[in-house]
Length: 394
Image 1 (cartoon, rainbow, N blue to C red):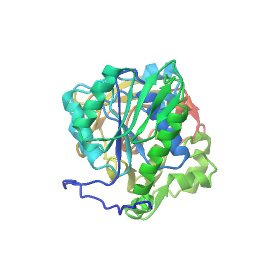
Image 2 (image 1 turned 90 degrees about the horizontal axis):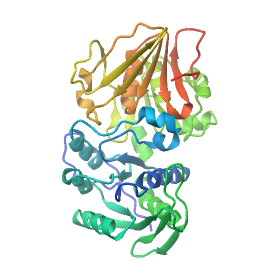
Image 3 (image 1 turned 90 degrees about the vertical axis):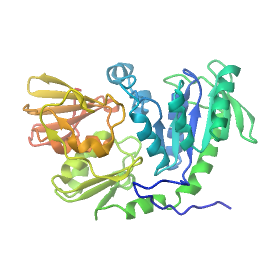
């Protein structure tokens, strides 16, 4: 008999004593294939409609799902390594503890002792190691933090996939975990099944709970919206954007829930302007994007931008030097003024910040860069020469 949990939301300023939602850490040394395994797992779980979210719990370097799904030239352009401080660490630790969905947490290969404390907020561990020394290090690390081992797997680039044991936890070999490939084999299939069995009981009724507690009357569930427009919710096509915008009311308070590309969130947020807009962030819950101010950025701003004016189009590439931006401090953020007819926004940012940027700028047309689209997707326009969903060079 499956155990079902009743989900209750913790106040933002409360101390969380127990969170019934699992947080599974994937641990192993550098170059063991953790990012490829993480990406493969989340794709397989999404295909089975298993609610979850992936966090990469080390100085975020831009290696989200887009990194593994993008062309190498795009990756080189967007990837940013490291952070100028560890200001992100307590924020990420807080957000793992307050998780609103089951998590898969990629720990990175070389956590510092302080970064290792993120494991205190996790519940289970998947070990992925290539040799005995790395295995001993990571097994000890997870044991000291009291994690339940879900799988203990050996990464062998040129070996053969195998499942060698199913109890007391999964054991086996994952072969060929290199970029451009997808994990496969009996050990991988068993791991997907184990995660689905772990996650599903804790998420019964969770989507309904989240939607019922939205702070606005009209909330858009992106999964249902995708079904309405016959879209793959895992791969939205920008060509559908004009129909989406025609379908939604404008200037009306809106909420958005679910997975979606940055350009879709930006377009809906701009369509709601100047009315209230909220979105569900898996780290924060229901969130109102901050009001950004146009002006001169201070040198130490937590949001930095590189401006590239090109004739009638300006490109703004945003970055987060501290790698993790606290939304409670975002109302003081400043963004540069733009006078060109067209504006392209780029960078690796949280969805609430894309929404805030789309509401802050009102050029003749605004586009958001997304690697998978092969350019920037126009999300707002005031000219008949450019339509929403158009792909312009990024």
